[in-house]
Structure formats: structure tokens, C-alpha cells
Length: 225
Length: 82
Image (cartoon, rainbow over all chains, first blue to last red; front, side, top):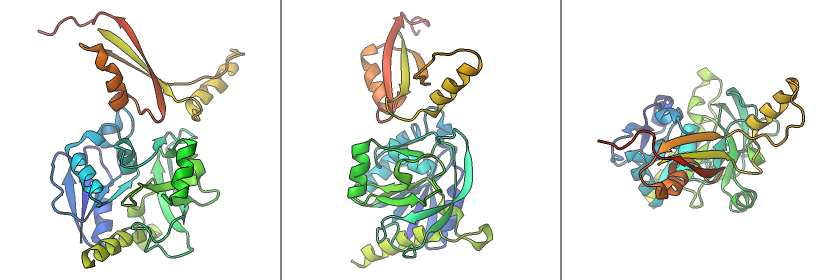
């Protein structure tokens, strides 16, 4: 299968994302100004500071030419993963519910966190080891997940909350300890922690790999169907 | 026309920046201050002020987390474009 990783001016984690994807498939970089997804099977919107995030995180990047294609791809059921700034971009683009606000501490936070898989068996979590926490690094200033109360209840009822910070690990004040949510269709997923930085024993944890393996397995099933 | 768009966190959403300011003021002897919120000011000259709400909804604010108020100031400061 082929992953496409979007590169905006100001992206900084696209190479790590590409290397992570390359462990489970082929991985190409998609330039923000191109309206061509190069026939990829899944899209990753990576971390960084797209267009400098000068106005509000993710607010400018959602208008990038490539994002029109990504939205079209998502509408057709294609798998889209947004990591950190990518999560913020997808929220601003309306492809994911909620918004990301400044951390309660107002500080940049860079630490390893433990995550609980709240929904297993989804296109993005099916390869996660059952009943085990994921240890994945997080690094951001604007990662406090927010959605209005009725929306939070709806997200929980429909199984769209895929990842939560384990008790005591919520670094940013996210409501209901939410670390990652999907859209209603289940084919778009965003999370603040960085699974692409946790794929090699050299950096302490390989737990992030299971997110990319999940995508690979989902695409393989679709091809077989 | 010159306009100001005042953007602030939506009521009820935790505003740590406002809280930080609220905690700092008494240290300087300013007592009796409550409900501090810190937002953003966007000042702009526009040919068609009727389009301002749309600009606010689509780019200047995120309506899910921010409220805005449009204040018309005066004639554009820059004059006409040649």
C-alpha cells in the first residue's frame, strides 16, 4: 500500500511520519500546493507549524490546495490520519469534530505519555495490542481538546473517542482525557501524541507502530474485499 | 471602511490566559477585578463591510471556541487604491 504524507511550509514531522509509514508500506510526500494525491491509499497530515500557524493553529493550512483533495478523499471514505498540527488542521477543516485550545498550563509540553485505547478494532487501532497502554511522546502548546458538552457525549456514545490519556497522564487539560478522535464515518482520525516518533527501540518505544499497522491492515482488507 | 473585530474565548470555555492576568493584578494592588478574558483584535480596512461576518466565520475566528464582535471605526485610513 502507499501512504501520502502532506508537507506544508512549516511542517516539521513529515519525514518521521514518512519513515514510520515506510516500515509498513510505501510512503511519498505530497506537496501542499499540488492538487494530486498520487493515487495513495491513505493520507497523513503531519505535525509542525503549517504556514507558521500565525493566526490560529491549523487555520491557514485548511485552505491549501492539497487539502481540497484530502477532503474529497475523506468524503469518499479514504483513510486520513492527522497528527498534532495535522489534528488541528483537520479540526479547522471540519473533517474532525472539536478544536484544540492552548494547554491549561500555557506551556509547551514535551513528554512521554501513556494512552489507553478506548476503541479497539477501528481502522486506526485494530493492530494495537489488546488491553495494553501505548507509550507515545507528546509535544505541543495547543493540545487541549475541546468540544461542547452535548458533542462530547455524542462522541463517546458513537465510539469516536479512540484514545484517551491514561489517568494522571493528561498533559494539556483535554476534556474527558481525550487524546484522539475520529469522524463519524470512522475513516478520519486525529491525535495529539506522535506515534511516528515511537516506532524504533532506539527512541524508547515502538508502540506508535500499531497505528500505522492498523491503517495497513485496513487498506489490505479493503483491497481484498 | 476601517473595522475592528474583537475576538474572545467563548463563554464557559476555560481561559487560562485570562486567569493568569486575573491572578497577577492583585499582586500589583489592583483588587476587585473579576472575569478577565484575553482575546485578539483584528483591525482591517474593508471595501465591503457586509462581508465581515463571513470573514469572521470562515477565517478570523473559529466559531466553535470563539465569539466575535465587529466594531466599525471610521473611513479607511489608507484611502482609495490606485
